[in-house]
Amino acid sequence: MRAYLSDRMGAALLMAPLLLFLVLAYAWPFLGVVKWSFTLPTPGLGQYNALLTDELVQSVFIRTLRIAAIVTLVSVAAAYAITVVWVRGTPAQRLVAEFCILVPFWISVLTRAFGWVALLSNRGLINTWLQAIGFISEPLALVRNEFGVIVGMTHFLIPFAVFPLASAMRSLDDRVLLAARGLGSSRMRTFWSVFVPMTRSGIIGSAMIVFVFSLGFFVTPAILGGGRSVMIAELIYLRIFQSPDWGLGAAISVVLVLFVGALMAIMFRFVRPKQLI
Amino acid sequence: MPTYRPGPASLVIAALVALFLLMPLLAVIPVSLTPSRMLAMPSGELSLRHYRALIEDPRWIDSILLSIRIGVVSSAFSTVLALCFSLGVWMFQPRFTAALVGFVLLPMVVPPVVSAITLYFLLTSISGVSSFFGYDTWLGVAMAHSVMTVPFATVLILVSLSQLDRRIDLAARGLGATVWERATRIIMPNIKFGIITAALLSFVLSWEEIGVTLFITSVNAITLPRLMWMGLRDNIDPAIAALSVILIIITVLVLAVRSIVVRQRGAH
Image: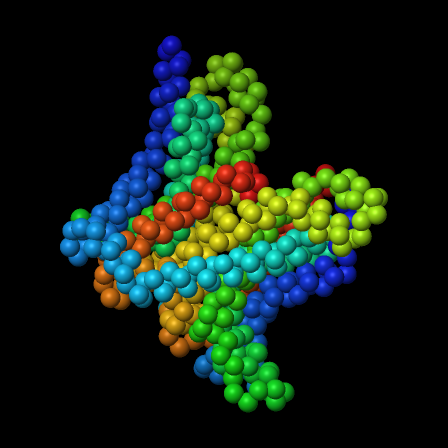
């Protein structure tokens, strides 16, 4: 009994500092934000009502969902292609694929967004070259619009989409592929009707990760959208710092958390957390 | 060994994706060498003036030093907290472990912008009481970064603990070791690789943190990413290109060294 008590004491003492820290520095202020959403500028449900009626807020929500859906589709498809080579290529191919996945993964989001500005802006690489060869006379608008945002976000999220796919492809039993080939299935058909369906959990996991990440994306849309293609996270920022309307910013945050929470609850019905690493 | 290698079609598509992934990283190299004061392609001559600006302009140096200070303090703080917490979980396996770990991981899964507004609320509230820790102070930023990095440190340490053989600890316990001795002389030496990785990752995450930092700083605590952000939003400063090239080179070198180390460990 005594040992049992001291065990509980030991656990409590070791675990308390972090739990206390997060309660004070995270849970409590989050409740404060929730309170803002109900009390600023006037107490009541006014801000949530505004969310339902304000056309600007709704257009931003719809744009966010649309961009997130496109980015998810493109990122998962692109990640699938490079993951196949990373997991099943020859050793040299694997090394190259790994380099191309991990180097961007470890480079900061700002540097990567800046790289796209350097490529896509009016005096960037692509427009300079296209004008030099006489293909176009006026620079193409590739950035400060939705196209730039989608390109930048896809670039940022491909490495995140790779990991669940790689985990699914690694655990795939090769003998199934052998059997399909032995039964006379072509390479193409083996890939589409055996390989891809067997990596389904990876595809779902990676699509959910990319989608959830893109909903709360801030830095890339702010830089590559140039204020013209505002997404929900940037709208929160603008409501807090530019047109001080803390209540509305807080209300959007609460809705975003609830939405992401619901999505994650659905996701974990399909995939176990371990499959995501 | 996989039976099926990717065919030519897969290789071509994968190569295009690889090109897409590397393109923006390569694009910053020519921009960093432009002699112009604006963002432009160098036409003809090359110049290192933007690299010189990084060394000579005190704003860049100050923000680099500030980012290092914040990174070291927040990484040390979050690694110690994560280590104690994980030791508690592993040694005593208390009830409600899953719920407690889930709570600790929240800042990692909640959309960063929501964490940012939450920490903004925290630091502006503190500012009313003490100006030392609050909004736009380096200690406030270090605290906010700790909140954001502590879930990652906890995951890494918990993963390395899960690979540890419990019988070692049981033996020490049976021989009469106290909790302190078990933790410091038996368990920690065995997971030191995980602890070091957790500290390094926390530092890197704090070093490049921008989403939260943007909400909690204005004019005093200008970290390196915050300064880059300012240079990117207004008119684009090519010094950012020079800085990006340096950061990319460091990343490539670190990854290369790491892959060599991993290979050698695997070979033995």
